[in-house]
Image (cartoon, rainbow, N blue to C red):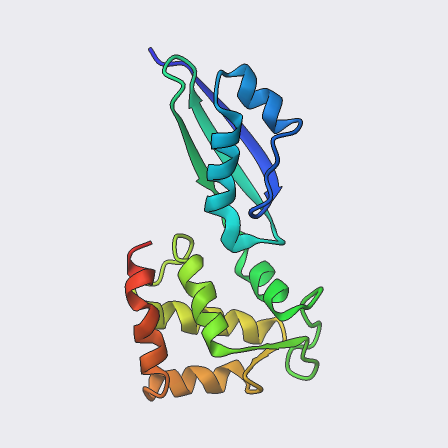
Length: 169
């Protein structure tokens, strides 16, 4: 029966380091520390500057391991991308930042494992709703207006550009 050891850590995206506590723990399990750290950094690079949970499951007999990356909340990602420290307490009247629509689409793509949307357009509209609720504008507009533009087909090319990537995640 395989013995499994699970290591759960919080790291900054793309910045796992081989030092304590992770390095010695991986080493004691007989794993190639550099290889595991490189894989973690590759899988978390999209979340640079954000703290995210990572779970490493190690089969102690075969030394095989699996890395699972948690995804920060959509609010956390939106705030970081907009350079805002916290959501607006009054999103209708006090705006905390502005993002390009393409950035919203990219957030939808990299957050796809967490989103329940069956296509990219629905995912983008969901993220625009989150942006509105925390006081962000999108290209200077109310996210509600951008949702309307998407429904009218105004941003079809942009969404189609990323659709395949969204569906393949």
